Length: 318
Length: 302
Image (cartoon, rainbow over all chains, first blue to last red; front, top):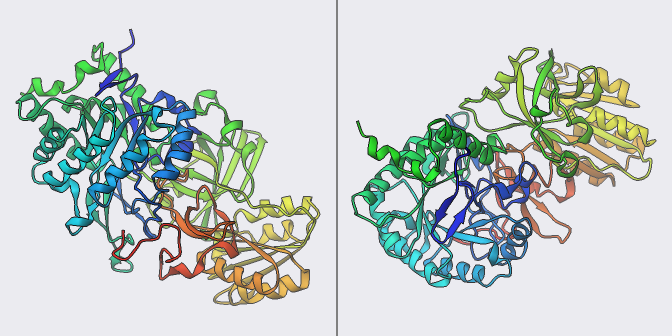
């Protein structure tokens, strides 16, 4: 019998745990040329801010061992054009959509959420992912997600703007001393779940020109190279939930997933759903391929339901 | 090839396929490698100026990013089924891996991608300019233009003779061929832009097509504008995916409304009208965001 791959995330029940990762899938049309995006549990859109943004100059990326460094600069159309064009398209395509939002200030996050809620295509939205891994203009550019207080403020303001039945997920950075304390702050402020992890801050030097290789100087490191960091972060946060240090909420695992085996690693550490990011650049059909591979692996191991495998490694410490 | 290797639902509708391509021929051509793959379903969809994105290094490769190459030619129904040809310069880990492949090795290929060269409605004279192996897509283009009754001339340039690509083919595909090399080892010593004006004037060309390094495309655009011709250039921006999702291959281009936007060269290009590209933004290996670009960073930056 086929494995039950359905997953409950906040108020939403999704038929599949598989998702695209924000910023690795554009806003739907591009990947729809390669697979039926309705097969995904949810399509995760590129982080959208209040106004249109050009993003940074180029070069914007560097290939790194089993990964890449990117410095895009949150290029995007702004929330108004996003809801009119991109979200409307996703709605007519029948895609369950997890909208990623970002802001320079906590107020901007709230404004973006308010515009989203009042849009005609809002019924395509199954959740909102709050990308708190962007610089906080009000705090000398320190990334919100590096500061539990700033993270909590953003989450609380976004929570106020959205209906109760729309779950919100805080996307956490691993570039912190104690990711559990940031997770605690976000959940306490009203996050229904956590997405972890965002990219790691990295840098590459072009050794021909002896200067930074990407125009933005530093960038986000992603790809299979960072997967052990994702597994660790998910493990620590799930362990804290099991110890009662924070309420048990679903974790969406993301970071270096390329195969079903990789996805199972994140699931066993505590992830209820899986996003596929950089691997999509290598294989456009990766988000659905990984889902098929994960389902087969679970079946081989005798699981009837995906949910039975979530965090299973915590009970099997040697 | 079985259907199982062609992972797409409706190629005619989406215009693109993801296929396991089998290498059937590889040979050195000067400084380059010319590769022919069996790629079912791709040839029928492809037009000159479009490109393919190849995965390199196999399923567990540490080089995840796709390598993009303009299509040199396609054959929809050869002995082996549809084939696609590319020309590569083995300078990095991905292209070096491709250059060591042998017959019957397999590579995951996505294509055709991007917008093709637009063709003139009238049988006007055209000049096709290629820098180095940037000439690869031009022969196929020349064939299509001559079928429309266009007079076609080619200008091929490179640093040195071994880095020219397709001089012999050019004589077959074009009505006239000019060659330039920086060191004078073949043809006229100098750059393609040194001889281009004369070719445009002599042929009365209305369109100049170009493919090669950014600096060359800018000079082609300048010369074409001065001679009253339209430049259509295929750009070479580094890409991570080739399919429009990574946002790394952007460049500033003016739209029909006159506004400059950072557009993806993989989906809105790789062919642009030369006079729409903001060449002023390309400085010293970087491309800056012009201050008048839609959504440009305000003071303090992004």
